[in-house]
Length: 394
Ligand code: PLP
Image 1 (cartoon, rainbow, N blue to C red):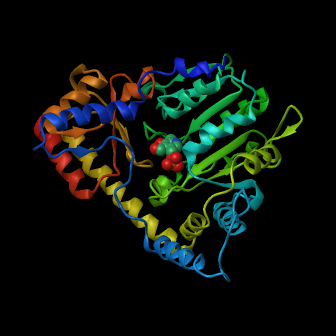
Image 2 (image 1 turned 90 degrees about the vertical axis):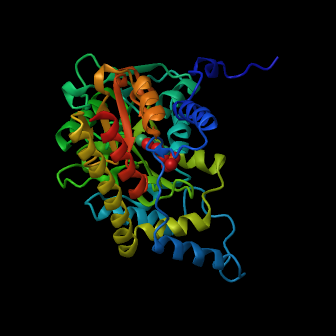
Image 3 (image 1 turned 30 degrees about the vertical axis):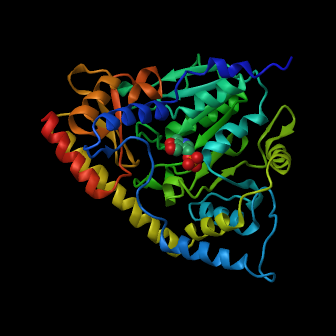
């Protein structure tokens, strides 16, 4: 008889955001008159920028005529998109060959799919609090998982030590949920460690565009030695509002080898087997993000989300609540007041202020007692949430 992948039975019964959605729905069903303010899931509120919209329209028109129509594109990405992304890295001093950049339908897809490259016995080291998909994708793949907890004592940026063991290392900087960002010196320690151990770093750079402090690294490839130990997974979701449009890119350097096998070549083999590429329309829209016009427009949008962060942090300051994040990241990570657990604080905010946030416990055990606010809402909703927070907690 067929045996299913029994690793699925080891998954926690409810994915964090699904559980939040269920609780929220139950509350709204009972109180349909209430206006909920959603600062929970990290979904954007602002539309795609004009440069992207124009490129998408033009790409649709291309598909309407035999002379400009595109059928299947290269599975690893259209040359124009790979070149545009590589050029974007070059502007920050990171030299990549376009065939080290792979187009994807987003970071979530890649974070799971990339595990195809590694042996099932590979141990995954997950720095927590962490984006929940890291744990779940590794549970599904049957990988042993080591949790490395972080806390305020290390600024939510844990570093390797003599006892650290790992084959795969998940680093997310700027971090979801804490907003913490590794400095170059800190990230260098992880790169050196991975090279010494023969491990591979999976660097999730989904929030790199939110870094405003010039000294902080946007890409792991700004670090010495990263080309022999790291894969970078990136996304236009939060950079340019592609959460519903879907486009990302993954960088695998050609020097990256393990066990005599080349990971870039393996990923080419994987993509040419398991996908028929990313839509022409989306890659055209995505390439527009990397133009000067696109960059100026997305920077204005990111500035709007940063103003939301300030609106919220001012309210938290007024209420005497301690927090971090919100400066180089679109998330604010706060300590629940009055010793409440993170799900107790979730219930309090939902029922007394009709605000939906994300309980820190959903990002790993060390997130208990913390809570995450997303700054991706509309400015009007964020201002209203700040007002309700003051009324409830001051
Ligand atoms: N990585 C992190 C840290 C995220 O927070 C998210 C989405 O919230 C993703 C990856 C997934 O991004 P995408 O929309 O590209 O799948």
